[in-house]
Length: 335
Image 1 (cartoon, rainbow, N blue to C red):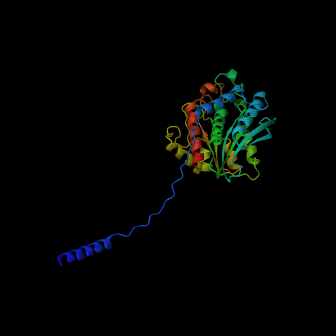
Image 2 (cartoon, rainbow, N blue to C red):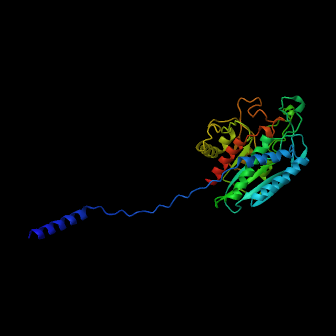
Image 3 (cartoon, rainbow, N blue to C red):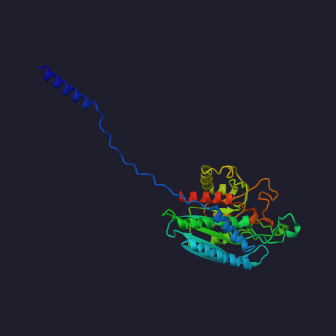
């Protein structure tokens, strides 16, 4: 009798315990987050691309150096891009002279609807009109920083896009503008001043009116100018913040995340009339300008070597090229 009672009580206890146990919550299988693999930007490679451009000599339009460099840029970009377009155009300089130019465009993921424009100018200044030595002020410059640095970074980006596929839904257009730096000599600036006409950025003005694809639209654009000097200062350029604050804020946040905050300051920079102005005003593409602005420089707000014969390869810093290039590939692959 005791034995049976014990068995019955034990059974009741087990049943009671079973009733108090919570029901199992069905498990939901979360989709694993897609890992974004960002390629390693090679600063040494970017530097070599800068050096190659300067080896041609000053890339002043309608010179042999200009023609030779255009051919090399087209061929080199063609090694990486799906398609290369050489956009030949004729424009009028500040003095009324008509001159030929070439915009060189590399297209990646041609069918993708969402597109980003990465750009720089590849021509160089025909006058060292800010050189402290008066004897040099009509000498063409190498433009290692002012022109070639941005192109060098973009060529290395192009190489990385070729080595590691871009996200399928994203297309990139690398546009190398010509005739950006052929504005009037400093000594004649007042003579040719006209607030209705922009005598600079002629290549980007042409492209903005006549893009390489009819009806072309892009999500946003990033312009590089003077991105190879030592100890750079990249504030948020004034017009960039006015036209495309969401783009500059996005890019600068990524720069902060990557540890580049000492160089990418959160301050508002001065107004710079550059290739991004027609891209915003004419093409309607929200575009920012990543440009080295030095408030204590002897050359207005630009680096000391700006528009002088000292804008040469000796004043190019691999670390700066690598920082800017690393930022760009992160922005692109994480888009």
